[in-house]
Length: 144
Image 1 (cartoon, rainbow, N blue to C red):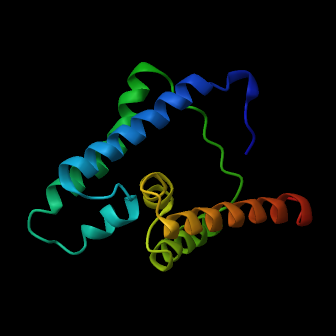
Image 2 (tube, one colour):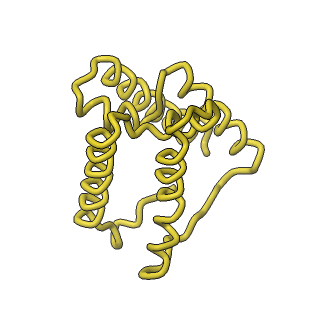
């Protein structure tokens, strides 16, 4: 993956980040819940009364947002440089990691850090270090 610096839009990116923060803030103020996607999706499997509606609405919003954006602007080109087996394995590893880490990048990185959670800081530093290491190994040591 490479960044197309000619079309990089820091203002729109900052606006998107602000909207994510606003949505996370509204969710915590209205429901007392953290906007961690793995926890929200995982909570659907527990089927607690009064918990399903807001979880489905939140996840539906995540799916509807790109569809609504597509009405106004074309979606960016998606390019995947690997096969389905690697994608499935990566998805499974992310799922296992979110269970062991007691949350996902959105839960720890957006909500946990804003609450000054030491556990979230450790988790985010671990996510970032693992990402840096993975890119370095795959691009520079394995030649990918």
